[in-house]
Amino acid sequence: MAVLSEGGGQAGTGRVASCLRVERLESLDPGMLQELAACGRQAMGDAALGVWQLPVIAAWGFLFMARLEGEIAGSAQAIRCREPGDIYMDIFYIREGYRGRGLGAAFLKQVMEGLAAGGFRRLLVTCDPGNVPAVRLFSAAGFRTDGELDAFYGPGRDRLLLAAPLAEGGS
Ligand SMILES: CC(C)(COP(=O)(O)OP(=O)(O)OC[C@H]1O[C@@H](n2cnc3c(N)ncnc32)[C@H](O)[C@@H]1OP(=O)(O)O)[C@@H](O)C(=O)NCCC(=O)NCCS
Image (cartoon, rainbow, N blue to C red; front, side):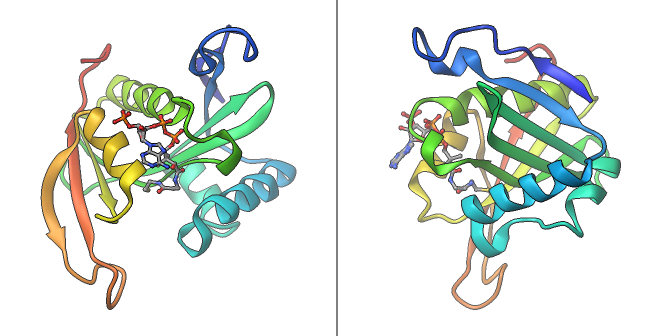
């Protein structure tokens, strides 16, 4: 496990985003696997990765977890692309009770810094064009539309392909 940030602040007092502890997990013990799968299901429904996928992402992709005061607040899950330097983030969420407080922006910034430090130069993500919080989150973080994927997840499920440059040490 690699810790990206310790989350030194105090959640009750200042900016809650400074209290996030972000880790990259390279393996999942059985308890963590179940917990993370349940958090994903709650946050993303059918789109979430489950117990058959999460260990694969942890071992050979990139699995980040954000904690607030010890509790799982969110997760990001990414895989390498065929194009060298590109990485695709399949899953990014903040759990429902933790949303709207700047945690998504803080977590995404740390994920992007972690991936940049890992040598990646561009982060790709797909997003439902009607998902206003996600579109705002990603555009504020420097993502721009790179394509439109009609019926990407089946009829009626169009997605925007978004891409952001990754700069080591932040941009
Ligand atoms: C998208 C998501 C990660 C945002 O997390 P969050 O912690 O609420 O985000 P923040 O508080 O940092 O806010 C990020 C931006 O979204 C906006 N936002 C947050 N909640 C919003 C809402 N309910 N309606 C409109 N905008 C909203 C914020 O104003 C902010 O935009 P700004 O920088 O222009 O002000 C969260 O809503 C989520 O997990 N959704 C379900 C999973 C998902 O859609 N993931 C993304 C696609 S993979």
